[in-house]
Image 1 (tube, rainbow, N blue to C red):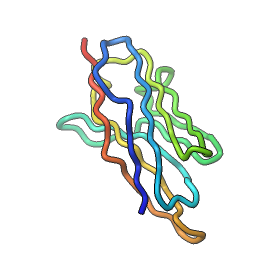
Image 2 (cartoon, rainbow, N blue to C red; image 1 turned 30 degrees about the vertical axis):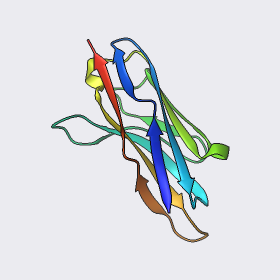
Image 3 (cartoon, one colour; image 1 turned 60 degrees about the vertical axis):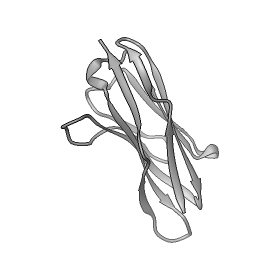
Length: 120
């Protein structure tokens, strides 16, 4: 079994920073693309940022220049550094990863999410 566990969420004032972490544990043979999604109340889940196993990244336009995604392949961990936070960044943030648990095939996994609340 594989688990993705997020941490680092919390309450912060507008303009502040938070750093989210997502750790993969269990039968992880190889991690492919990892990503952060978020979902605000009453809204659809949206992609925030993604990073491939080689380190290529892409970001939602709304977070470009403020958020930075990174990963430590040796630790099977992904990070999201969030700076200049805005109230509209308030959402539950989810980790997503494409994971190989053996030498053939991969499966998409989700974490349980971590809440980020930005006060104005």
